[in-house]
Image (cartoon, rainbow, N blue to C red; front, side, top):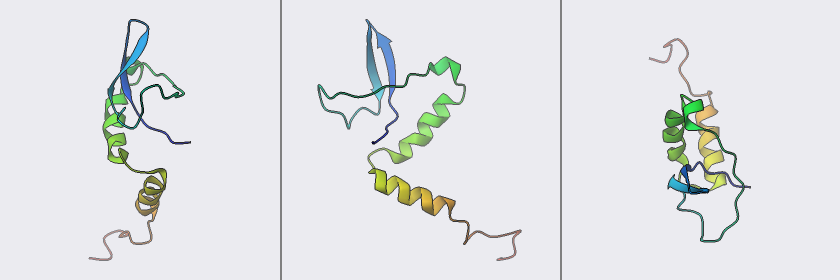
Amino acid sequence: MSRQHVEAIFENGVFRPITGASEFHEGERVSLVVEKASDAPAHSALAEAWQVYEGLSEREVEHLESIALDRSHWRQNGSDR
């Protein structure tokens, strides 16, 4: 199952996407988990961070995250300077 962050506005009984809906096709069925933007102060920062993954496959996202979480090449206390 693929996940994608989409910002939307609820108008006339329908969620209208504002950003991030480019991967969907007309009439495609999706499952929504709705969070009010005003209830999540970090929502806009999270939405911007999520855009890094836009257009990437799930496999590509997993690969990028594995690189980011691999601390084997990180400096410790500046000892590699």
